[in-house]
Length: 247
Image (cartoon, rainbow, N blue to C red; front, side, top):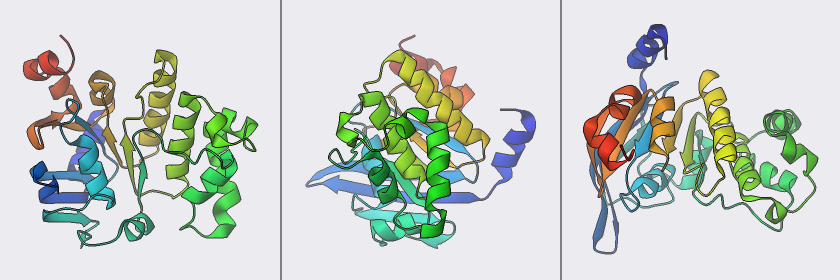
């Protein structure tokens, strides 16, 4: 990121602000008083070991997971008690862990479902943008989504989230289970979206790739943030290198 961009995102107001967030599964506290923010136009990476609470955090932001304490503000509005569909209407769109495409439905229908909150007249143009980004989806548009490879399903899951015209894009483990070449392709797409000024919150097992792309990052351990800094600072942090980067 060049200096001008760094200044821009540092000065930008917070689009997402989370304060004292807690969430439980039964008696187990999965998130323990989390504070964080994502500014407009920023890419923020969330890294940590399996079971640290990364997916739970994204689900809490999108409203799929209930919270037991704290507040979530989106564009200055307290959305802590809003249903997930109303959060989506405000522009919080998620590409979930494990892709979760609708297997029996066609690729085209999956994309249409992502746009269900949007005006019908922009559907065709938005779908064309997705097809330009992922040509293989255009080629196979009439086929059931379940016939796609894992990498193609990931492209569809990202495309479906983009059909909602997100103001905040939540990406949960977009490279999980993909071959290295496909990982590269998925990160190229994220880089393009970032360059277009999209605000992205990225949860990713591949810590090096995520932090290299991110303006800022947070390290999550057993439901609490232990470190935060620019992507570059975290990549060069000894603790992070030892724990997550295998260095």
